[in-house]
Length: 372
Length: 255
Ligand SMILES: Nc1ncnc2c1ncn2[C@@H]1O[C@H](COP(=O)(O)OP(=O)(O)OP(=O)(O)O)[C@@H](O)[C@H]1O
Ligand SMILES: [Mg+2]
Image 1 (cartoon, each protein chain N blue to C red):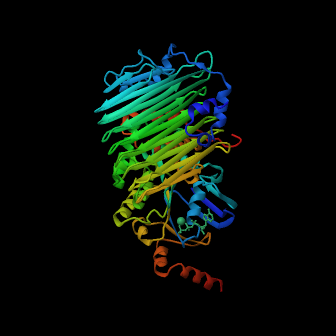
Image 2: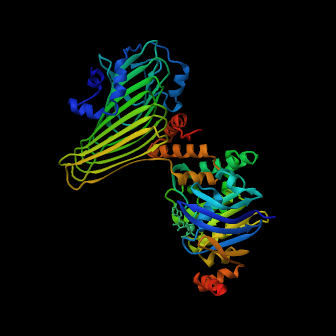
Image 3: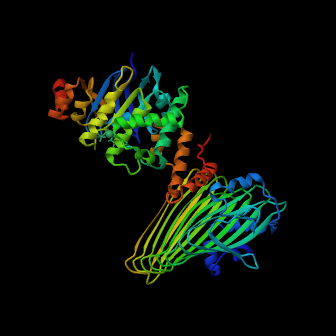
């Protein structure tokens, strides 16, 4: 039975199998369980509300509980977005001019394993929109959430996104987003993915207009047996387009991280500039990270570079910190956190650095010596 | 009353013997200069003193304040007052300079049983020390040494020394790559810290630094040991004659 693969995969059977090869086991394990449709009429514990109730986004917030928009927790009165919901519960957000929106997806476990699906369309017609997407949840019976989004950025507009995956060990998330970036427009994305049993992130971005720009940053910081699989597919389909991808991965224990970054420069997309860099840190001999940059170029006068490294903590840096008096464990934590933070350099509002850094600090992977 | 006593030290790095019977004694208040050809083992000595992994002592001993230094972890040595200004300071992207220095200073204070400084007290101290070295405050808000120019890195080392107030500071070629003004600032920084209870070991290739930081003793380290010691005038003679002169004198002495 390929139920979940059919549901979440795209392309023909071979493409699906290839794209999911590192996560096929994780998906099979989920297929073995019987999930019922998640109940959205559940009360959200205050401790969970506190995690997304940020003063800076009050009035700019939509909260989905187990996939369903929750009217009492949501207040988007001053977000600048026009919000429409269709008959099957698909939400469309339109921004024209400046807008800020904080989308929260809350996983509240019920007695039985359960799953939810949600879909959100976002269209930025003009000006600059800022979107925070946060996934939180509480430990309990297993949950599987699936979010399908698409972002359309009209010519000359800009969308900056910040995505925080902050899930308990019982929750899994499959999140697929398609991005269309028009002429002279910009898309920026910063991700911090932590926790969860299984997280799959697909970002399929098309630079469809001349001088369209994409900057994607992210980090997965994985502990124990966490498993995060990120697929970035960037397609340059117009002249003088720019893409810049920077990813950091850290894993301890038996955690597993995958970053697949594919950049295609289509015929005619002359003058494209594509950059992809991923650096990864393994803190345990049993942790595993697969970083696969793929670059395919079919146009002329293209500047392209990619690099992927997987390594251990820098012994020289560790010694430098210790020689100044920082104890070993603290020195390691400083280096691990610092390594991750280099992915946050593009976050535009300093308001948001805080939540990103707090998420990392709470989930920081650890290096433990054998025998400790 | 000796602060540091190194006796017949043999050190192996990556299976190769680098220090081959080095002895040196440093008392509080003294400034020792160490000169010597490239590859002689000067930086190796600094690393061994600071406690870097991978430096295996096969013979000899190092006493610091009467205790076996080799028993201590690098952070414990720092808390006991040891400081190494690196020949090649390490760039650490993502780690904020101020945050790191506050963590370092407070960890040292805690280890010594002193109270930790709060942010206000720490910043006050930082501003004081920055002024002495004419360092720009924005360097502090950047990642540790990341993207610093060669000279900025060296001045940052001395700034850290000023902040941490060690009792034994080893400066490994802190003068290399500095412009003349920066050299004077570094020398001023060191001279301002000279004190009866503090000692310096200054590794350098150039007499010029020793015009500003006048040493009590000058040693020549060649092929893993101290082959000649003297007062400040030894540096002048080295400048004039080069290291070959020492080798010749040794040969003449042996004949
Ligand atoms: N990790 C290592 N593996 C192999 N050889 C090493 C290692 N570290 C140092 N060495 C060797 O040890 C010798 C001494 O090096 P060291 O850096 O101490 O010299 P130095 O006196 O500081 O030289 P310089 O004046 O050029 O700074 C050199 O021959 C060097 O190549
Ligand atoms: Mg050296």
